Length: 160
Image (cartoon, rainbow, N blue to C red; front, side, top):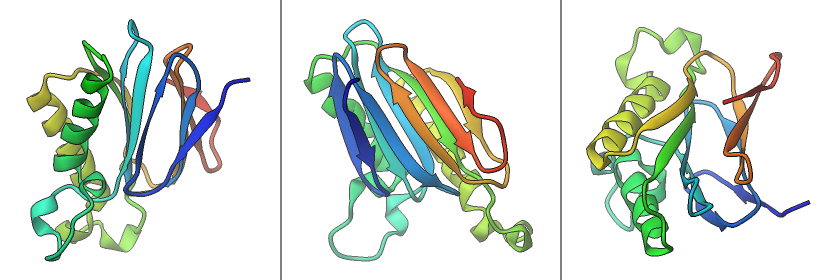
């Protein structure tokens, strides 16, 4: 069995040739996998917020924000030889029911919108997605098959 790289909030990792990428605890956060199936290379990032311009002053972790994480991740993959990238996206749940009417609390929805916008700007197609809802997710991308396995609390596992 090949190695699994685990990604935490605001982190990213790359794999080449073989292996899996996994992240847990996707509530309002969004997990994005960028991959090149021909070159057998993939990267995953665990995005926490949509927009780095709203970050506090000081050193900003670019992998926490959709607008900077996806650009950085795609650049890292291309530097390692990736050509035509594709994306799979999961997460962006509305975790707090009472906050639905407060726009600034709709972080999951805003994260998904930001991810889709940046991917469109980068010309990277979204091949499949599992976003929204009100439950957290764990995702695992398998490079050998390009499958994204999604485990959601109290639901069946799905593969996209």
